[in-house]
Image (cartoon, rainbow, N blue to C red; front, side, top):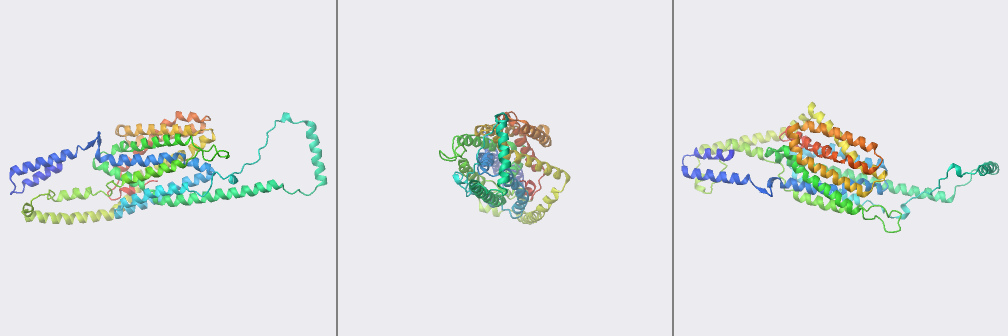
Length: 499
């Protein structure tokens, strides 16, 4: 409306236009502005359809696989320390690479290209993990140590024990040299060594795939978040970020529950195999790939590297933005207007160049401010805690006797809570502030971790899982609001860079 009134006033300053024509043009522009501001589809602003559907497909892919990835590694017989290395190295790579990718995106305005490469790397990385060169159902790689029957002390006969001691003393007198090892023991040690080599090769392969894929995959979600925050910032609605992200939580919970429940009825190996009872997680990889490619198809429609600042600067210096259909009327504009337009264009180019050169430096200087340092320290702690829960919670519950059905129900509860909190996040942040929401999330994280350490029945974990709505959705929305309020023009991707 402001732009419409400005154009109308500028038109009135040109004396060769009829007053009636000016009023008609002004009314037409007002109608166009009004119709443009009311574009909704089923009550949803069409401008926000891209982020909503991107988060839905992207997090649907994540939900179909990531909750069960550590269990897949467990079936590969990797140790907890090896899984910790594979999963734990990703945030550190992202911590280093995301600011670098962000600097490239801000400097060369190639956010779209980097975004496409990133999502393709996410899909390719998970496909490579699924193709780990090991046959999980190969019996010769399954090492089962001989079982030993446990006997109570009451089962031993004292006379038999005394006779056994005499025989032992006699054997030492008759055979002072140690007897050769049992051939079966030698064979067992050889097979065990071969089995350990297979696990080691699998670990090295997965580690290399994780490192290479993470280097290229890490900036994808950050760039999408930046585009979403920028879109909301243009509409002065950054506090509604949670309403966009809740679509992703809905997709995450839906696929985590449906895919998890579906694979719970599958078997990894054919009948008669010792690993027959293991769950077949390979369908999770298929669903993940399809969803990530769908997210890529939607995400490329983001308006990356927004030029709104340049456009608004152009409006400040020139009023010739109206499109006249008559060529003679265009040529009839006075010379002063043309000079003003040329001068304003040179000013715009100088301002744009200055912002282009100093945006990254300003962003880096912002990072060393005390409040930003504390914010990044908090985000670092939240990331560690979130990663610990996502990687090892199901592993821990599996050791306690948890089933795949329990894991699917947990994923559904988590996502339902996150959708609810994301939906209410704008009101929550507006009422108590984004910093208090972060504090509340830290308290809920503490409660969750203490509960996980104390429970002995895995089903009791369902009592604390609703807190994930605050720890994940609430904290994430509050942090994104913080970034939106404190980002620097020309370096917003750097400021938002996070693993």
